[in-house]
Every structure is written in C-alpha cells, then in structure tokens.
Amino acid sequence: MKPFVLIAAAALLLTGCQSKKEICAGFSVGNLEWQYKNASKYRNQLGIKTPIEGHAYDQVYSFCEWYKS
Image (tube, rainbow, N blue to C red):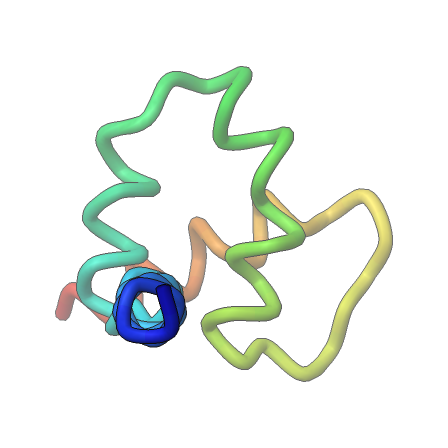
C-alpha cells in the first residue's frame, strides 16, 4: 500500500508542475468560458505579481502573447 501512495503523490506533483509554455498553450486553445474561470489560477502559476481583481484573463492573455514572441 505504501508504494502506491508514494507513486500517486509523485504523479500528482508532476502533473501540477507545468511550464509557462504549456500553460500558455493550454490557455490559447481553451474555450472562453473555461479560460475566464481559471485565469486567476493561471496568473498565479505564471508568477504574475500584480493581481488586479477581475483582470486575470487580460493579464494572462498579455503575458502569453509576450511569451510567444
């Protein structure tokens, strides 16, 4: 039982660590409703330091546009 718990914990940690490139790629292909619901989570994962409530989608979108170039 212990090895299963350790493997499950390791898998959870690995799936939780996404690169900025993966986050922006997933954000750009998601549907608009889903993007708005999860924008603040992505803002935190991308390390955007200036959270302005209600503007998370715009901040993530701008970051990902800048990151692409």
